[in-house]
Amino acid sequence: EATKENMIDIYMMGFDVWGDDMSVEEYITMCQDSSKYKKGKWYVLEATDTKELLSSLIVYKLNPSEDLIVKGIGSIATPANSRKNGYAFLLVKETMNKLEQEENCNNFFLYSDIGTDFYNRLGFIVLPNESQKYKDSICMYYSKENDIDSISFDIPNYF
Image 1 (cartoon, rainbow, N blue to C red):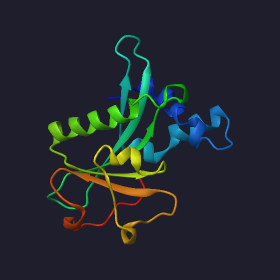
Image 2: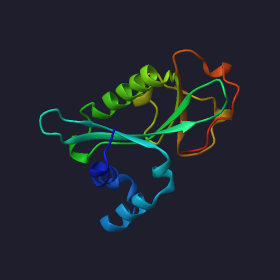
Image 3: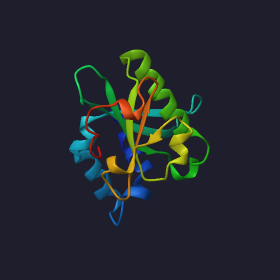
């Protein structure tokens, strides 16, 4: 789990993609003030020797029904100079394993802005077209227990 001391480094992992035309200071302030970011729990992958942050993501608790534990994974980012090394893949995989073991969570959603191949390799599937809510972000689902046709709750909005 991320610490308060990690947060600026975490925010900066996505600055080149999500910062638009903001200055670094404006972007960090926006992230710090984000009610969305305050609702989730941040996780990081760090180098064991240097403690350098290699990747980060946020996990949201979704409550579609009383009998299912469902999480949303978002804001997956890796510093630009460390991308394409498998760090985000490892962090997503290990975070899902941790939540499965500690919270018995086997249902995950995410919205992909990078296409589907990366998440397909982790076992995520694309929701059917009629369940998609956004043009530029593809909603994907992962479960060890339930196929997409068996879920009877509403697909979450972008989180």
